[in-house]
Length: 400
Image (cartoon, rainbow, N blue to C red; front, side, top):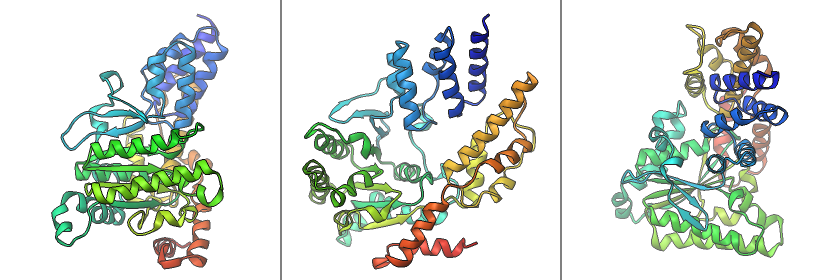
């Protein structure tokens, strides 16, 4: 066996031991490109689960698999499709290619346990969950009550907060709690350079949601669209915004059972037209996870990993105030990488231990501080109508 093949096999073994490590996946592709035989890397990535990884890495892996002639596997890794998860009648997951809808076959289906999540899968954040129950779940579960008060059960809700704090997961869990369809759209994925195509994609998203109601239609990174009209005089951009708002306003007459939820990291960039009554007039702050949520997240991430008996995550939940969910993932992956380094040095598996997590704690720092500093300024000096009162309350409670 050549040294190159041996190194590739060792990386694949490490990937199997830590299947959520983005660093190992990148190292595997680099080794395969530089080495003599990449077949084993193509085979491993062809079978691996792409769900834990960010969109940028998934596209890189998809391109890598395409180069190796693994087109079917590459399609499974690509994140561009609009994903619709489940329906109230229990039907399977579908993939909606915007403007070209097709059902997912068994080859592309997610494991059944991943198709629907509920608040039981989201640790902590009880105050946020309670607001979601009142603002999202109750209108969808009890439309008759809202009809009695002449209050529409649909409409719009805007989530905002630091990056990586679970806005998408909370929206998906809300759909699971209410037993309605969940359709997720990333605005950057529907923007198109060809004239008229972005408008078609936007209309297709709303059409799909109407067909699957009762449903939650979720737009991630809404600022990619909502902030553009203010900053650009481009006619194409104005047309996209007009199409979005026209489709949104059209729901008032046709879809009481369809709720539009959007998420943003920069609420101060959202055009005021999106915030007028009847659109995203209800706003919910999603803060960094509290201690209970951090403990839950850390335990879930370590679950199934080779670890020393009695490894206590309470210590690290207490020491990670201000960490986002993404920061906690980075912490665990850093500890895993250190355990893998020790395993390679010892030529034997070394389980995760307190030593690895203590070392990772010195390397990984929270990324929410900059966002919170910016949000504090807006909350203090541009808090029209009390739109950032929740931020002020959070900062007051967690002031250091």
